[in-house]
Image 1: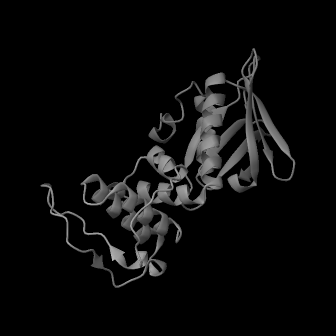
Image 2 (image 1 turned 135 degrees about the horizontal axis):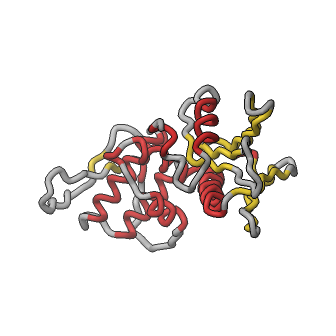
Image 3 (image 1 turned 180 degrees about the vertical axis):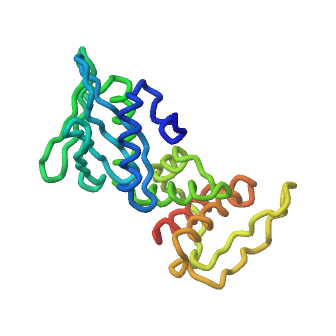
Length: 240
């Protein structure tokens, strides 16, 4: 069995159906599009050509074989078009459905319960990314580089926590650049912050995120107070 389809057989999906779908998806996927999960219909009676649902980081694709499996219809819906997703567990399998912003409701029944739960969870994660663009930027940035890796749940916690803390007045947030410790030994706090030659408004999203990470390292090393870190973070997020 090909290695490229093994990762989609975790919940007893039909190997033949998965192989047929993945062979056709190679020509359908867009740039930077990755398949997250594939669920395959399993009816009580023997189904030679079951329907399938593919979830990627960009859209939901409904796959329906036709002409005795010689061809296949594909219908896709981007995450921007999807309003909500639902799962209804029945005695024989589950029904996964989703509604669009144009009041359409699409469903596929007889999905094994474990597979239905997996696609429901994956869909909720993707919809959360669509509704929270800042978290999507953090997610894409941290997964593209191991050096800047941050746990997604930690990012969610930081964005959701809004605290009003009294701090010392800082006249120019945009010109403050943190000094990142180079050695593993505790670094000596600088007497004054280093002034950057570029303002926050001139930095890219990656540079802004790296700047936020630098402030977090200073906080972890005890070089700045929590209140100061919160002020810096709020200022940086306003430019993202």
